[in-house]
Amino acid sequence: MKLLLLVLLVCLALCLAALLHTLVTPVRKSTYQPANDDPRALPYARKLSRMVQADTCSFRDTPQPAKFAAYQALLRELFPLVHEKMEITDLDGSLLYKWKGLSDRYPIVLMGHQDTVPVEEGVWEQPPFSGAILDGKVWGRGSVDTKCSCMAFYQACEELLAEGFVPPQDIYLSTSCTEEWGGPGCPAIVAELERRGVRPWLVCDEGGGLYTSPMPGIRGTYAMIGVSEKGHANVRLIARGPGGHASTPQKNSPIARLSAFVCAVERRSPFRSRMEPEVRAMLETLAPAAGFQIRLVLENLWLFRRPIEWFTPLISGQAAAMLGSTITFTTASGSEAANILPREASLGANIRFVHHQNMDESLEVLRRLAARYDLEMEVLSATPCPKMTDIRGSAYRYIETTVSRVFPGCVSSPFIPTAATDCAFYDSLCDSCIRFAPVIYSPEERRSIHGVNEALQYNCLPGAVDFYKSLIAHSDEACDR
Ligand SMILES: [Zn+2]
Image (cartoon, helix red, strand yellow):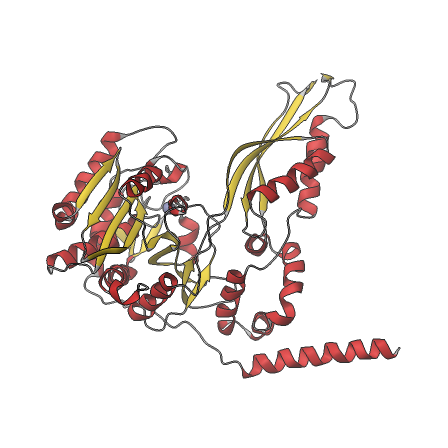
């Protein structure tokens, strides 16, 4: 009885401490808003519109030299100084630009990609290659992913070149034409840099950005700075059986075992749920802008971290993806006819790894679980998580400083994107691979990526150009000497 009372008193004291801590922690919101009357926005939108009008959809293992040559001719027309003054290496359509700076010790690579995903069936409000400028938006495939950030860094270089500016450090622009299917474009660029002995101090690619409402319950526009990304794999789970006629069914048929496996995984994730330090830093950064209940939990992770790790997977799949590896079943095959038992049935699945349970361990967990259902697992492709960029390191801090310089009132937060980018190919060459495109992505814009009605609100483009200009111009202040 005494023990129970003691436990109750301790719980009460902890809750009171959390409550008090929340009450005294000041509310801090990210207040940055882009100007709506910047006269540069429309001319920039027109350049982006021209880039969107050039169809650069890419397809697995399908070289399309004429398509990308036409796009690159357009780039030469839109950004003449970049194409006149920089040294350009063409690697089967993927481009590496070098802008010689005063020093080659701390090179910076700005990244994007030329290609887009194909246009999905569905009702587009504006045709996908119209580049229509309407309702404050540039419409069409690639407007968000990632012709907007490419436009912004080309334009930043163009304006600085027009002023006769020489960057303090070597600047490279890296744009592959095979990003959307993880093709050989970016690896070829990385190999070329390696051949030249270039080790970038900072690589800045897409993946994060200025996110409006980055999480449910958090209002405002935050600089979500991607510090790594999840690893990924495609696997096939195979169940075998004797086959036979459907009129004489047997228990534990291949499809029954596959189904039982899927249900087990859906009921309880086989992966460990744990908060990486970077995820914790993100939640603590975003917490002060939330409503009181969310603040009470997120501002007291010393008390609530474990319960969040335990209960999140039961509540929200999206939030759980921040804390653990995930598996999604995507394809299925069985017998050819409705009245034949399959001798072999299989399921395809896509897996995303987190750092604390990376590729080998996550695959092993699945393999062991599959074996319990008498399933074999075939790994079709697998890539581990790339390195984590140090959030106390100079490159990360330089991005933060540039954000506060260019986007006043904007709060920066580390972030681990769940989608794969070309940036991962730089993992062996650079310790600070940042996923951050300085463009504003509303929830609607984030949803439009790879979907229908991709469209970018273009009032953020002047800020994006200024971000890259600042990143190029002030790099001498930032590098560790
Ligand atoms: Zn992309």
